[in-house]
Length: 170
Image (cartoon, rainbow, N blue to C red; front, side, top):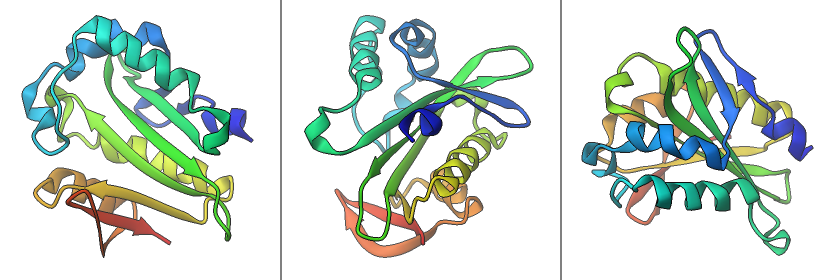
């Protein structure tokens, strides 16, 4: 099931390519904007640090964690340009697996619906593979991500995690 979940995805305007260490150089330029970190914290990583992070993500968690990490680079189909990434962490649950999703789109590519398109494709795949509950943690001031979540069918809950609102698709 993991291979099927992690396979590439294709949408009307995007190719979602499984993340690999070699994506770091082009993604460092996409993510090198302080404004992307206002609501998620941290700071842009230099290519070498991003390469190390991508290597860890591509390797996945230790088997005892019982999680599956899914990460894709968003690539605009018309020109092949990397514009962001989307991810899901799948965990086992009593009623079936649950998944937490997240997305980031580089500043020049925001406002064109790319995050919604990528997140919806990932959510559709997760649902097709039996995900019982899908969530996204969104900072209360991150109205752009809240709009993406709402367009994907998620709704805000009363739950909070690290100061973020948990949005859910049940």
